[in-house]
Length: 518
Image (cartoon, rainbow, N blue to C red; front, side):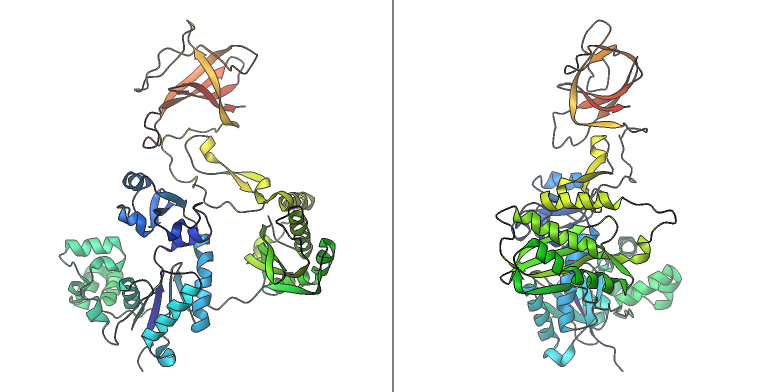
């Protein structure tokens, strides 16, 4: 019996598309216009849109090189969770037409080709493209072939909303003229080029036993791909259960207290159906409808997980907070909906043997403040990667997971050695540092100190001059020179005779106190 054909849907530049869909670029509809956008991970480009490629930006390029080619780049931090979350509607849209979708990665999925059910493979591809355009995904490309590898290559040859069909038995002929770079393994592709095998057809003509002896098992697998003999099976996902709960009020309720009282049973049902699957909800979307339209919508996060009482409180605080504004809920509420945004295994949130965690009263008070003033009204500090002490600080809304922070595990050349300062000033405080003769100490661009620092003072401090007992430095700061070509600075660690230590910066416009080692 012949193998089932494979249909692949490819959405190019998906990290950029996902970021634009959630408004992370801060540019409105920039993703649909001509603005060049790149997504960065570890200071390297992992995705870019067509406008950025037109300026010479390519995937894998360092951030500095990309900005030198296109100074107008919009930079977005890579967020795999965001990419997967934005790709979920695409999976659902395809599942409605053909169950058994296998997500390969965000932006790429595979499914068994529908065959004659939709009037042929080209017609099926056109129908899927039409459904995805309705879902808001304009750039989708579809390929159909005997195997997964060839179908993906066919999708990459298609244009927007187009379908490329490789006829049955034609995988080897289709792959013959493709460059070895289509293998998507730079090391193997580079080796084949050095061996004088620039195309997949050149590689496919080699004997299988020779390839096995020269390249091993992995090389033999790549050889089968080049010959159109990919034996990979689709790992179709099981569509997630519908965990959404809602309650409709007949007649609509016009007071917050009545709505909060009436959603209690729905909140209990929402938590119970998660518990039967061994799950808890850590982020939930709460929506309220008035006159058949969503009048209030907000995603709530919990530092642990939501109980039924927590959900009732969030409904009350959300509606009460928006009723204070004319743009909020001012009409009777006819429906409240709970939609799980993030669910996790219940075992990951089991209580410790001796207790622990945040006081429940604190959590409720903070969540209520966020309900009245917004999620960013209460923030907690988090540590991220950076060179300067201020760069290593980040503020994250209470109850939310840090997303898009720079990794502190990466090397940061030029960063200060430990220990880190305890107090970091939001704005560096001006200072004056002089030598024994009372002359201002300065540092040349070659890192030469004019004279040893003897004492310093803070103009805003009435204590006067502070004698310096010891000092270390300078450490030149040469960062973002392409953005601030005239800026230059050097850092010093200065210890006063009173035992207090400070981190200071000597810049071209004077001295500043960045932080204190209390």
